[in-house]
Amino acid sequence: MTKSFVTRFAPSPSGYLHLGHAYSGLLAFRAAEKNQGRFLLRIEDIDKTRCKLEFEEAIYEDLGWLGLDWEHPVRRQSNYFDDYLAAINVLQEKELLYPCFCTRKNIGKEIRNSAHAPHGPDGPLYPGTCRVLDPDIQTEKIEKGLPFALRLDVGKALSMIKIPLTFKENEIEIAADLASLGDIVVARKDVMTSYHLSVVVDDHLQGITHVIRGQDLFHATHIHRLLQELLRIQPPQYHHHGLLVGADGRRFAKRDRSMTIKALREGGKTLPDVFALIKDHGGDLEAELPF
Ligand code: GLU
Image (cartoon, rainbow, N blue to C red):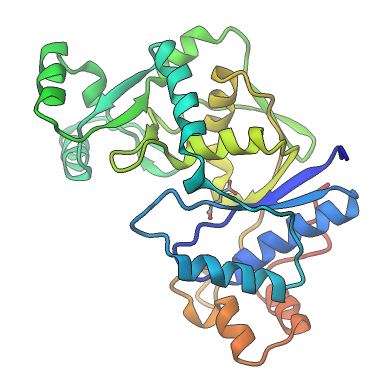
């Protein structure tokens, strides 16, 4: 059966889901229902140190309790490293990647010492230290076995793309601002992929037509659009929904333990209680429904 509306919810099992996740998952699920489409669940577990089976199991329980129903089998990213590697190879063949040996500490130091460190929506951009590394030093570091990440040379990538890149947000065409995230990591030091790469590859391989996710990922979409173009992937449509806020006016995070779905369901709350809580924290399950 082919359906023209396929959406997904893609949590990371690095903690218990909170009310903000419930909002996101419910929006995507309801959009699929409204459009008689498909709803997929994807477990984004590439981070071996932070992701735990215990949290993954809680995701299934939480989402079931929220009334969500998803297709099986669930795609768990940790089972698909070959797919990410294939995408990395495509980018390598275009000579768009470079090894980056920097540590967070080095990068911070470099930025502090620079008079005009460019900033993006997520803070200072990677200053490009390893992009201009002397090739002999690069070889020496690789031979020494120093760990490295692979970064995308965004400037070079842009020079290869002849058309202006855009993506559809709520049916409206938005110009992709490609310099806004700098040279992103496509393969981390500890695992041969990254959030940006895996999400683009998976949305494509899973045939996702509509991505519904939080506003905090809006800026990432600009770079996802570039990756899609380089990998010759058809982009889905997007809706980035508003984020719920806590009593302190700041956005929900995993630290808001009392608002985890697990705590709510174990504390005797009902589904209507959850809907009311979402509303109290600035969510709107009716009006926000995008497609
Ligand atoms: N795994 C991401 C998260 O939990 C979401 C990825 C996405 O929806 O694109 O924040």
